Length: 275
Image 1: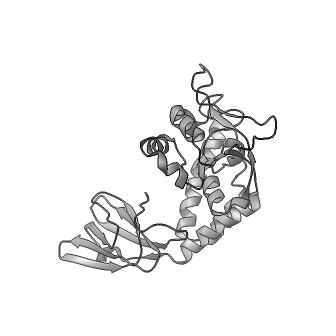
Image 2: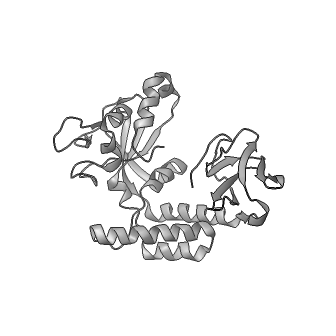
Image 3: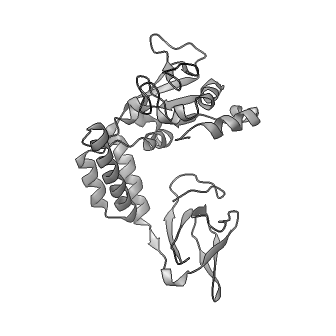
């Protein structure tokens, strides 16, 4: 589920083509059927590396393009913002700050009164495919156009051929989409537990089993793991519960502020995330 330029995805399948047959679907946030946001023709994630996008769309794995026509439907309307504010959780408060910032940007640069959330649409498609309606269509990426480089071209004039493996997201169920987001924010916040800051000063040196947080990295995911913190007095230990995520925030004084959240999806013990 890439939500940025497709460089790494294209490189991976070029280095090991056999992974394509093991991928059930590539759901990407990027592209547009008519008009871009980086140029008049191209969307930002695609035009950043058009050659990589051309490889990804041309592979034999199924591709769902969640482009601008879909993501602009995911508007954070005032009633949505009010519902998020009503949750009162730490994740909800963070989302409100993000929406406030992007709301000001949308108003100043595009004259739009309310912001849209783009990457979340691809996430929602993976969690619940019925939130988004799609249409099968051949998709290619323009590489040579002077003014159209990075443009995603979807052939929507007629029925898709039987061997078409790409599709375009066209309609969003706005109410169900935001219900999904609100549910996630509420469930994450309901199990949040802040750990006493004064008990964990220093560096996270390892997480056992199966996942390490190197010095300088800010977060990670583990299940039933023992987290070792090195401080001036030796080592302290934290036991994570089943399917819990550890979020590490470092201050200027090298102190560590730890918070634990539930893992809602099917995260691997060895996957990492940024904060």
